[in-house]
Amino acid sequence: MFTILFVIIEMEILSRWRKSKNFATLLLLLPLMVLWANIHIQFVFGLFLCGALMVEVVVVAMQSNTAADRQIARRVAGVTLACMAATLCNPYHVWVYQPLLDIVRQPGFYHYITEVQALDFRNWPDWVFLVVAAISVFALGRRRKVRLFPVLVLMVAMVLAFRSARDAWFGLVMALWIIGATWPTEPERLRANPLMVFAGAVVATAFAFGARGLSNAALEKKLSMDFPVAAVEYLQQTDFPEPLWNDFNWGGYLIWSLPGHLVSMDSRGYIHGLKRFEQSVKTWSGDSSWRNDAELLMAGTVILPLRAPLVGLLRNDLRFDVQYEDETAIVFFSSGAANTGESK
Image (cartoon, rainbow, N blue to C red; front, side):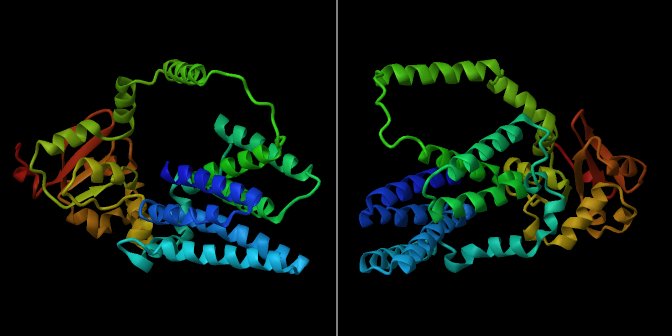
């Protein structure tokens, strides 16, 4: 959510500068990039937007060959370099880029993690995005004078969005910006009471939440269906044997719900390495190699989705005993450690 907000803020800054050419406006990017780099790795989206603007002004300067345009190009290039330096103002300094390099060097994870796979157009939001993207391309093409910046931004955003569902939001934001940029420069001012507009927005939001049945109870029910909520409560009340072996889909939830305990795997596959990640997936799937999975054999506790293929195999394996089971999850203790698990 922070990255989406920061992209919108940056686009507003860049749009204002492209209209006014006020250099002070661009300086607002520096604190934004410092904050962004300390919150989320996708601050690289912000650097890309700065780079796209730099490419545009450099090309304009080369074509016009005027002193004014060359000065603008130098200033934008300077701000872009300053933004890159600003991202180093974090506890990890240059190593903040390490996770990004790990992801780029290990593309094999894309085959296993749904959110980084391409859009499958089996849900209505995917089709809404496609329609908005098509409108943005039409809106950009019908302009009498097309600048390089919006072309670069839209092209890269569409590539990222269609390549990975997780980045579809970036394509949507850029598409909406393109559509908004084609709006008349002097629209008729709306004569509306701000308080009435705010009240209407609140009512519309409340109605939307009510129509979808969103409430704490509904969210908790959904959570218990997708994650091992009750199984974790059981483990929290039990001195369960470690190490813990788990499904990578639940790794993040277990890290959050069982602080102080190490999980065997989570969706940050690049941390664990592709080979280890793939072996975990094979074991979960009941592949014949599961019998030789050293991490599984050393595990004191195994927590799995009830319908995981590995569950049936462990039920018939004398090395593991069922300790807890519900409609969502099942917990095994290794036979040697089963007697050591005591209630707290």
